[in-house]
Image (tube, rainbow, N blue to C red; front, side, top):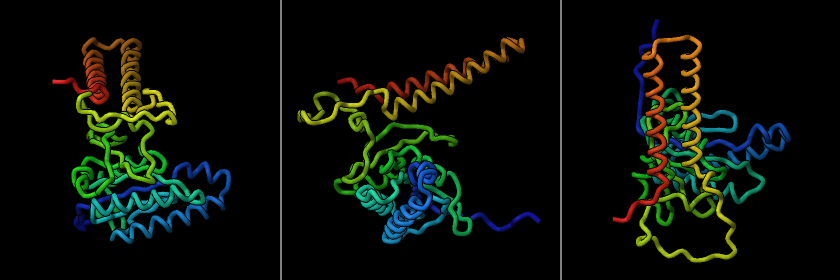
Length: 271
């Protein structure tokens, strides 16, 4: 007999956490890695409890936390990363935070809200924190000196909608490698003077920026699909319109991705 129990939903802040290079560490030192994971989980679990949250889902080295407050979730994530990043005996983690509607299934949380938090975690730097547009909109004026800098809109893997993502910039939290490429675009007259620091390391190449890497990945996928359609056209001898329509659609998609990338990286024109 089909299940008739109603689906229960709620709006909550989802924090996704996952250890970096856990499998690689296990292949080198299983017992040491497990001990480090236990110590790290003790730090994470205590921080989540202090902010009024709970551990919902767990999977080996990863977890999903259910936290009632958006601001509390961001502060909790900062506390976690500050502590872990200062302790070489612990496992480094990536964190992602999203405010969204979720399904409650027993003790677990399910749905796109959970999936998006997990995708943000995967995209974060080791020791860093990424948050969604919804978290930014809710928490941006309530975090004191903590910054949330835009990385640009993206469509996370296996999700349908494009969403704005932000990096949390705070003491003790790993920032994206190309910090100068982040943030609102300003005209030269609006930009504050930049002090010269002769001791600063040379800037990384622009090719390594998260926005460019995302565009290159999208471009390669589209060109791969386009190549497949062309091969099918040549080998199967299909009518012109059968393959022309998907080819045009793929080329248009490539153009929109390129346009979004250019808009994200080019400075605003002075008015």
